[in-house]
Image (cartoon, rainbow, N blue to C red; front, side, top):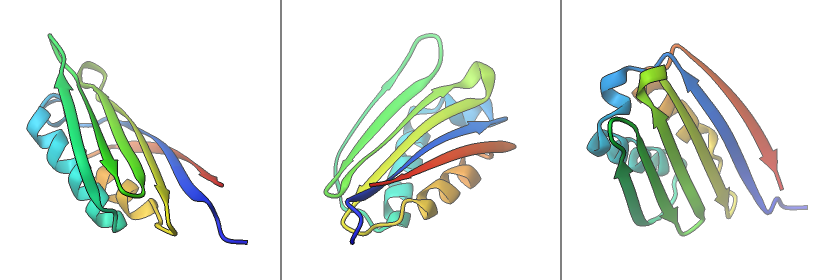
Length: 111
């Protein structure tokens, strides 16, 4: 049986504060993660919080990607949900590198 989709829930620790608090950089990184997965971006929405932190959500034809950052803790929470046979793991790896995470944790759900 084919899968309905794959869902990665990831946590990144020890990330660079400047990266996590830069809204444009987060927008670029989440878009690059979607490209790494082979997804088709449809709409990107983001918000920078005061005094710090960013949330970005990218709607893709195959579902979505989202990221929320806590720069003061060097932490980012990420959600990559793909359908249509796409593998979200390349997106996870790209985010891990680009956020310069010292450590990460990931859970994959195959539906």
